[in-house]
Image (cartoon, rainbow, N blue to C red; front, side, top):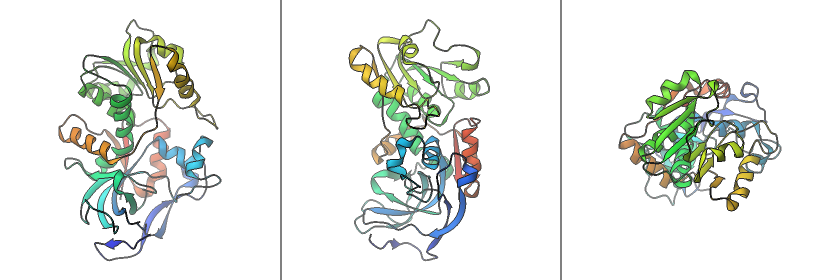
Length: 337
């Protein structure tokens, strides 16, 4: 790797969250330590991280579950020092082949081992930070909002006048998905728990359904698209709630399965899709700068904004992951440095 072109001097170590083994309980595997500062390659930038955030992907990388993630995260132990992915901060240094970014630029996006004072980021996975967001707000956008955008726009093909059902509407992905579906002109029915209904309604949902008080798929309505982020409902039930040419996009609804973690339902949906008039499937989120720039345009236009439930200091990353696992958060959980 090339030597970084530093914007400022200073120590070559950094505070970071460290994980040396897999485990499902954040308190047992995440701790703070001093590490050598991240180094960059010729096409990377060194970001002084001002904020990060946690999501379900954080837990998967931390726990090494389902086992299907381990070819990426490390077979026996974590390949990276920590499971952080989302960053918002200031460019500290640029690699020898980098164009378009310079020290001092405020950026956001995704990077490996993001729970640290510094992170090395590929230039195709970051973009200028939206000027109207704080660093903490911006750090909650990348992974979750990109997933929502690709679910609603690219895979759900949501258009004006369509009826759209969104399960898990109060979560990190769901709060973005509700806003995006409304922005694209859909009539949105959002599913959430009792205490989160008002928050989802405030995002622009036309109708909200409390899943704790009845079957949200049993009504007479048929939907042009269902964005299934949570709920674990069978394909048969979901298909029954779709129009004959409707689209089902499964982005979550995980189980505790060790090997596939519930993704067997996604696999079955994709296998069935060619044999029905309905489009049934899933996708793997693509983290790229083009999507971030699309999100920035929506944020700057005032039609998309992150919902931040709570901000934790980096030293309390384990507590933030615990809050996520307990299902108490509405929207996103940020980490500040």
